[in-house]
Length: 169
Image 1 (cartoon, rainbow, N blue to C red):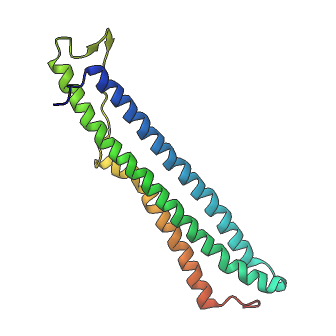
Image 2: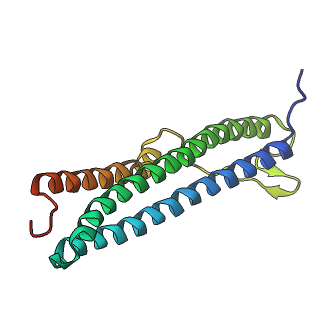
Image 3: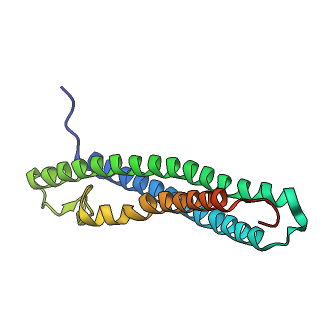
């Protein structure tokens, strides 16, 4: 039979889980920043390429195809990376909820005042539960922006196919 966790162990575990969640959410933020910056540069290059004179000929045609394909590839790569970070964050949030509930039970069962441990006041803060509405709304930007940008690139490639990409077209 496993030894019962102490209040100190649960507080330590809760702090570790909070730190791991923070790290994953930071990764989501950094990856969204990379997506925004990369796509803004690519969209700018693409529109500039559409407007340049025909004197660049074949090079212009290559760029008109390469830029959207690169944009789609970046969306896919960052999309997978975002999904991984969001999955780990979700798993840690579920683990944190279980740990928080165990800590609450231990504090209520202890002979100490339920809100004091080793002379320090313990306040179990309210949090955003996994699968709650605020948690889902917070996850919408990374889940929706990546496919939306990829769809924009696909529409632009479709427009190139319909319009044609030869110089002078």
